[in-house]
Image (cartoon, rainbow, N blue to C red; front, side, top):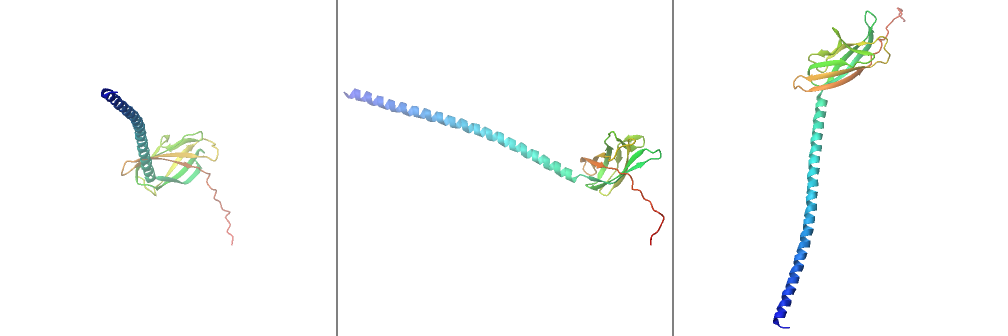
Length: 194
């Protein structure tokens, strides 16, 4: 072998090594691209998860705000609920309601849910809703519900309250159930025992 053959052989070996290095770099680049793709998918999944987390946090904040507003709203209580009859013998429910908690209200509209036994709240021209002006905790109101003749007991009068805050404009909806009973009979024998 002469010098030219050795040079050709060396050039071939160098070219083979260069080809091997190029092949190795191509495999390495392919592996890097695969890893980069999987990292990109993971990053996209993290973005989706972060957006979902932000949506959940916004929903929680909304619920907390709603809960705070609801807690600041009025509470009502039935003080008395009696079945009475008018001068024509028609049954009515006389209900006394008090605002027990909450802020001052500029208006409260009360209505009774109609049913087979409850026609509605009595107003001057029949049945409908009753509106009270300014109310605050401690305010009491008497309302009367028109009832069906010979209604069965126990009877539930479901009252819906639509309330507007006096100094802020917030509104609340409340529901309260009154169960009127016949009045207690009060009698005496006329005798005094000693």
